[in-house]
Image 1 (cartoon, one colour):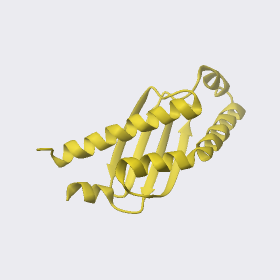
Image 2 (cartoon, rainbow, N blue to C red):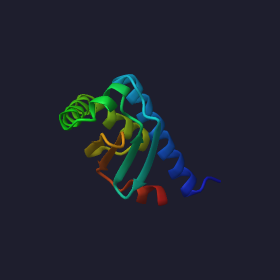
Image 3 (cartoon, rainbow, N blue to C red):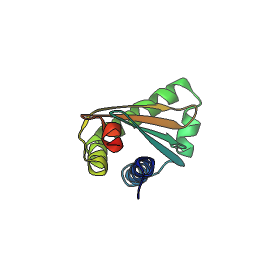
Image 4 (cartoon, helix red, strand yellow):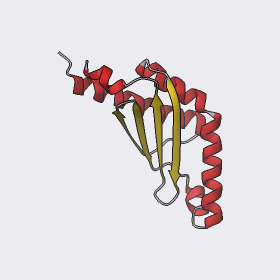
Amino acid sequence: METTLQKKGQLEADISKAITKWEKEFLGRGPLQVKTDILRNMVIVHLKGILTPAEKELAKTEAGMISIKKNRADLIEAGNHHLREIILTATGVTVDSFHTDISTRNAERIIVFILKENLEKQLNE
């Protein structure tokens, strides 16, 4: 019998795989590591190793960091319907909003999907 933790853990792993696949297909390069956590009505995705070698070089200046942040934000916004669909398909719950930021110093991105329902509670029922 599958426990709630196994079910939640598998769903988190499935979301990580789907986001990695999207990054590779849509952005042309995937992260080195992805960890997803489901907390209440949030799906939190932490991606590590997301910058290209050229972006790492560009990030050495303040103007370069700002440029990378803007470009990456624009790219994520262009694919936001895909990201929402990934979460809906995996969880069965509609995304109400999502928020993201990138650290050019650490080559990391955080994406927080706010769901219309408390997914963690559903998984515990």
